[in-house]
Length: 390
Image (cartoon, rainbow, N blue to C red):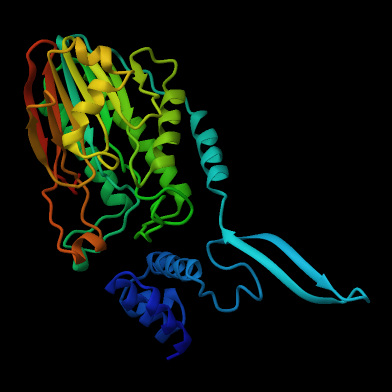
């Protein structure tokens, strides 16, 4: 075994796959050699996993050779205090290292580079049904997540997620009516993590990530812009709602701003720029409302939307309210008689991650486009399942 000291990192592994990779790296000396030992030519996944494990260990205080000789993985140098004696000789030095805070710089740089590409000019469809609105919902898509089939039952990475999204939107467009209006409802947690380190924003739970945050930003903007363009070819007007999720509190914000800037010259595209994590739209006498589901239970949402000052008038002028949520990765529909609304939880297209698999959580994978008449409410729905082949 070339580097037995690497086995210490086994204590910081979150999955059996990570334990296997760490053991191979300790045995063969580096990630590339570990990949070769498994018959894999490209060692990039092994390197990404190894860097993620080391960053996770550093967050928990284990970074051999770094805190006394340099900056630990995933950290940046902060305040440095030096103690000198009467002769000016350095007696002791204190360094403050903190998790990297360059996420904002990377986000701004990526968006600035991206927005110079002009939004495509899309011809308005000639025939659409004026009284109809089609709601396309993608919830808990977790773009950037990594899942290994042998551990979780299905694989998930950037390439798979992109293929699944393109196929799902294509299938939904093909099977739904030519409504004049459409809503692209990104129902929260579209991105798997929210900064340079793959952690949940609030709880700081370590996540299995497939790539670097900069690449995740690039792909996110690309697939959202492609989706909007695809909907514009079918519908006259497209409204975009990008709901805040518990995995992408900041990500949902910058993505919303990107879409607003990217499509600002296209009058057929509108963006709900609400920073309040509850959103609503009125279609004729129908109210359609949205919340990711991480801050309030379904049963309490009708009273929130009916009493919230910014939505009170909309609620009062609507014959029925449909409320859409996600968060729990499974489908659920219930009629709230006291609240006077239909509350529906949507399933996800994404695969399970290691945490869900190891805890025995199983959910049906799907996405829906629901069509509403401006007076009669829901008149049609289409359900698609993930397709990983083009």
